[in-house]
Length: 221
Image (cartoon, rainbow, N blue to C red; front, side, top):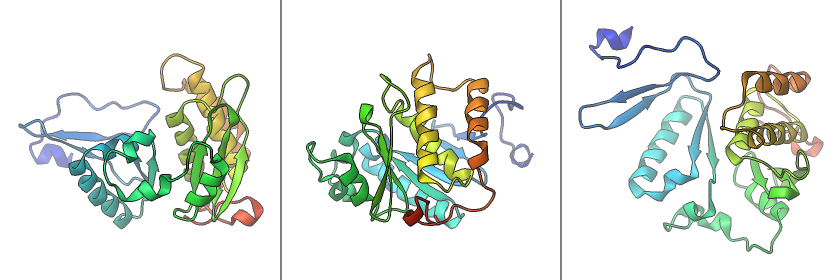
């Protein structure tokens, strides 16, 4: 309604139903676009966006706005090359050689952020907090960790639903990733999503993410 009053023209009708959140894309005559998200709880940055310096400056500003609004900031690595194209400050986090273990990387990275997840193909994955790592086995054989973005979505969903157990959160992420990679297309069917959510429903809390790694729990974010 506010956009209509500001004489903003909509090129398509708003979609009333669906399985995801809503976002408004504002496009000006020179084809520049701005995406408007309302009251978000988590701001997610893809690693591919770090390839351009102008984009990095925009990301920094967006992170500042997200934090000012009380949102968490999450980053997915996407690909190792994304962090090596520029002399970017996170390069120090990627000093591990291919011979070093994923669990070592998880422990190291967990000193810099409240929660980190590292996937390791058919060997499974790790979630790290405060210098400790919790192992998450692959969801099935021969399927490995699964689709990376789907795995990340499971972690984020667990945070939003206040899952406090690292093991449960990682298992949820692995289950989503395995389901996603075993089908055509990237989006889970409504039935698959409902089945997964219901199978983990007893682990969902109603308060903020809490506790400590000492008991395998996630600290306050």
